[in-house]
Image (cartoon, rainbow, N blue to C red; front, side, top):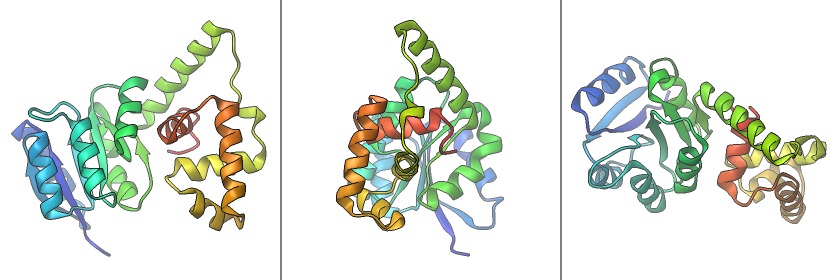
Length: 216
């Protein structure tokens, strides 16, 4: 088993200590560093090259979302998991746009932490299960207010396959290879998916997939 190297970033020392203790109960995890603010997290991520960064969303000096964007821009192979008390769509969309691959609610981190780190280290997204329900409830409420219906049923089986692969972080080329299609065909399906679901970027694709429990 390859050891998963983890950087913990939180401005509260007691929280960092608690996360370290919990993470190091897993034989395949190693905490290689701790950061007390966003700028230190960016510096240590570049210096230590962890596989996963656990990033508090509310950080001094540089907030967790901006720190995430800088870390991912410098090294896209690093998977960032945001730790947050907020389960609303606006926060989640901002973190996904910044490049985060996971989003953990602090009140459920105890039960989800190991699974989240393993998933993100494997290149998969991970979101606290409670988030999907909150997002779906908000989404249904918005549709009702606007007199609209969810368009997921309008997707073809192939489009649903591609939607899941894209939400899991696969590129158009990777999805094409998995499905034995041309990249152009996948790009065309992607365009149709975004039109049907009224989505505008990759972050919104992931958000929609979380909401619909297409990815967990």
